[in-house]
Image 1 (cartoon, helix red, strand yellow):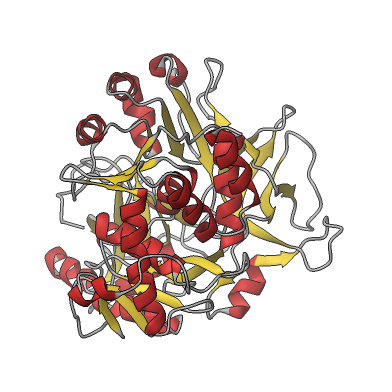
Image 2 (spheres, one colour):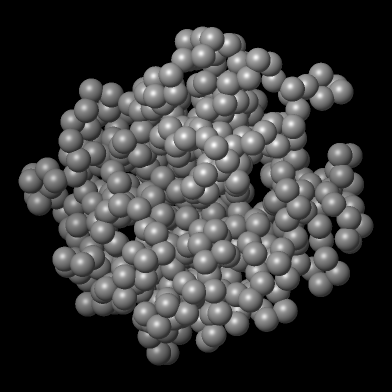
Amino acid sequence: MDDSRQNGAHASAARTVCEMFDHQVRIRPDATAVRTAERSWTYAEFGRETARLAHRLTKLGAGPGKIVGMPIPRSAAALIGLVAVMRSGAACLPLAPDDPPARNGEVLHDVGCELTLALSHDAWLPGVQLFDDPSLHGEPETSDGLPVPDPQDLAYAITTSGSTGRPKVVGVPHQGIVNLILASRDDLDLIRTDDVVLWTCQATVDITMQDCLMALCCGGAVGIPEPGELPATRIVHEARTLGATVLDIPAAMVGPYGRSLLPRLANAGVRLVAAGSSQLDGRGLAEAAGDMVVWNCYGPTEASVATTWYRCLPSTPQRAPIGKAIRNVRTYVLDEELRQVPVGEVGQLYLAGAALARGYLGLPARTASAFLPDPYSATPGERMYATGDRVVLQPDGDLVFHGRFDDQVKINGFRVETGEVEHALLQCPGVVDAVMLVREDAPGGTAVVAFLTGTRSADEELVRLLRERLPSHMVPRFYIWLDELPLNRPGKVDRAALAKVPVADLVYRGG
């Protein structure tokens, strides 16, 4: 049996991320696993580093059923930490170190986290294990003696904005991410052993789990760019520098700018681009990409990253479909009575099968309201997740996104529920009422705009206060004070009217 067939046969039988990664360490010890502009790690080297750290974490209490917080930005250290935590049997909870300490502290408290992996000691961090602790070199360098997680044990946890003003934490088991990895390799051709996947998002975004773990579990390599934002020009540079062949980029970058960006990526050696978006402008993408493949994928945080996929073709319309479900995932388009709606009609998308998260950690009532019994499954106890997304099932089986049933929005790849931002605004002195909208017509491009009533205070002061409560991508860039908020006939705030308030003359205020 050749190497690729042996690799695929074993990985298809693997039940956890740890098993898949350990297999690559055994069969491809000298292949490159991770590379930066400064250095590379072989699978053997990366296996030793992550094993040492995993052994230390287990001595400190990590293991199945535990969560290890990790406030480390995108870097080789973060990737080593992510894999080490999983190899310890625990679930990794990435946090943004520049988010307000109070917010991060609330998250760690809510999930009962008693151990964190960090670059430095900070007062708000419980049970800190320093990443660069020199004593780690005395720990074992293999997986021998490490806990063996179950497929239903959590592999990772990810924060998502909460409508009550507090962030929620979603826990995803190994079963879900392994199912995605196998589909990525065997069904979608997203990863090959000679691929280098460019890690383009922040560590706190669940796409990290697909891009990095897909590569490391299938014999490819992860390319880690220099720190900082990745605008189009930098993505092309980093792809060329690191030899990237696969990458995931925001739909806004693929859509409006894709006609020029995609050919440049192809010239840099990229063979495949994935755009995680429910609203991708598909016109002309296939032509711009040439021989390069462009996929549109869709998936909420409450599932294992991406649950449906669509390959862009010359015939792709402006509203690109989000595609069909991957293996072992079921999709339903249902009405308010949970009845299946006819093909061509709008309904809410529900997801079921192997991809589902366990739920919102520490929030059983919220979990029960979103993860419902699956009436269409013959297996007792099966659940389905209510996405809140309006979709249409086309005759060809593809799903097309038609908006949200609630007020959730996407900002720079992060899903944000307006309730968290509005809750923070209402904590500011003088603010009586507050509404947050995302305005695509704002000066400088899409921005978060706050509409406020009460006693006006300086915008700069609001920005300062909000930065103590919210991560930077949630802080409004513009503030509009009104005598009163417009109401619609049912007596609710008329968001449609606010969406028409002129913003062209506003001055940039931060955020």
